[in-house]
Length: 270
View 1 (cartoon, rainbow, N blue to C red):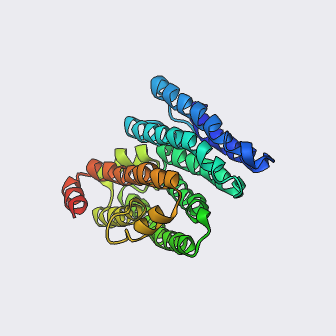
View 2 (tube, helix red, strand yellow; view 1 turned 90 degrees about the vertical axis):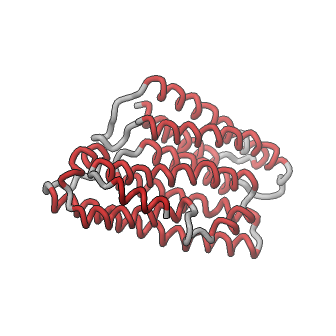
């Protein structure tokens, strides 16, 4: 239940922000959501809840670390947001704040996802809900940065989807299983078809690496960081990059279980 709370708290906050009529006081919804979210995260790390939703959600040490980093960065930015929106009182903030809280929900979902398909959905959602955040200044340069971000990250997420399909196909040709929960993949990786598994890893690395901002598909970063409000740049650099790195590390976990550490080492070192 606590894992659902980690995801649902920011979603409810986003709904409240969308419905709240006052532009002036809407910014307070952000810390009012972020601080309880951080408290729930600390409690979940202490409690170490079992996997739920048929093994699709769980909190291992790696996911807990990324989730804690995301939540801490978001709390710091939520406090900054109060003063930021006070200095931009004439600008509408309904869409911005709603998307900001949905961004937290998507990053939280990615941190606790134990299913490659669910992880992919979460990372793709971060792209969709963060685009309006980059465009907030509504200038010619910000719309250019937003479109570049959407285009390149969409290419990357499409490549990651191909990677997931290749991993599933490797399992089908190995032990006949197509269950892409992380625990099942790690447990059976040694029986997978190695050519398909290697191809899947490369596509996952390039796809999620695009979201992380790895070369050569990194050209969205200077524009997006430069045109987005400062707190969004912080969330992209500290939060989204960490989540994308987590997705890559999930692929590395599967490859290590399959005995393919050498390929991982060469691919990650470039």
